[in-house]
Amino acid sequence: MELKNIKKIGVLTSGGDSPGMNAAIRAAVRAGFYYNLEMYGIYRGYEGMIQNDIKKLHSGDIAHVLERGGTFLKSARSADFRTTEGRQKAYNNLKSHGIDALIVIGGDGSLTGAHLFYKEFGIPAVGLPGTIDNDLSGTDATIGFDTACNTAIQAIDKIRDTATSHDRLFFVEVMGRDAGFIAINAGIGSAAAAILIPEKKMAIEELVEKLRIRTKAKKASNIVIVAEGGKSGGAAEIAEKVKKHLPYYDIKVTILGHLQRGGAPSSYDRLLASKLGVSAVEGLLQGKYDVMAGLINHKVVYTPIKRAIVDDKEVDEDDFRVAKILST
Figure 1 (tube, rainbow, N blue to C red):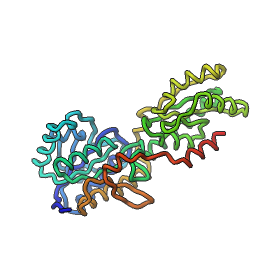
Figure 2: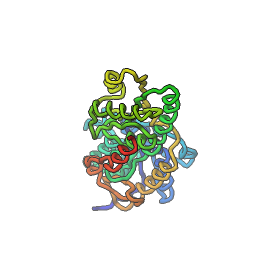
Figure 3: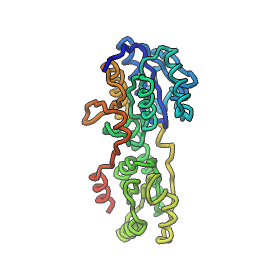
Figure 4: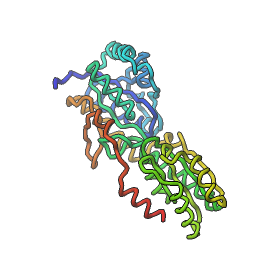
């Protein structure tokens, strides 16, 4: 592969925000400065690229962002980037700034955009896995996943206080439309009575029987964790079905929603984002294009974007086994 003389790199965040995105931006920009590169912030993701919302970044722009949640570069969905005309306009804007390469921080949709852009216009890109869902192959954890799990567990701990005080049954819905990683980790970490995830369907009858057994065992509280994309339905729907079988329960539903996306990143997410931000710049300089930088067994690896977004990352069966044992 012919290496390009990279002098200017654009950084963008796209899709849903996740804690640690700012830390990744900061690391990439500081690494760029270390290697005497010019770094540009592309605001509002691909939409900002099309609208030419692109600015050269300086040291002051990344001061005191490491500890902040969200993304100071902003994020947005872009219908126009899905069109050939939109991508052509985005390319023209990059060229007007002399930008040679991209660092794209986001989930599968964001990395898909980087892959397509490279194929069409030859703009070298390294993706960073910035999503709380932890559903990208090529990394043990995605940026923001650890913080989201911590946030969910903290919320569930508070819910348990009132559940115990009133002998209530709570159904708590966490994010994870297509992946149950947050649900399984938050469920184990909060001693959930049951965990429902998209990857495995639990019959309502099975859940009801589990709750009946816990009632006989005089459990002080019962909390069921439901991933929003569970095959059995959302938390509210499942609660209604269970109520018909267990009318004596005082059932409540809590949907954590976007609460899980916000907040200061955990120490792990700061470290992960920082390592991957530096690795993104170094990867580009080494001629690693159209790849995603990830961390596997504490080592940075570069996985082709196409494989990172296509290969299904599955919930660890052993985690599910442990959760089942601990909920009895």
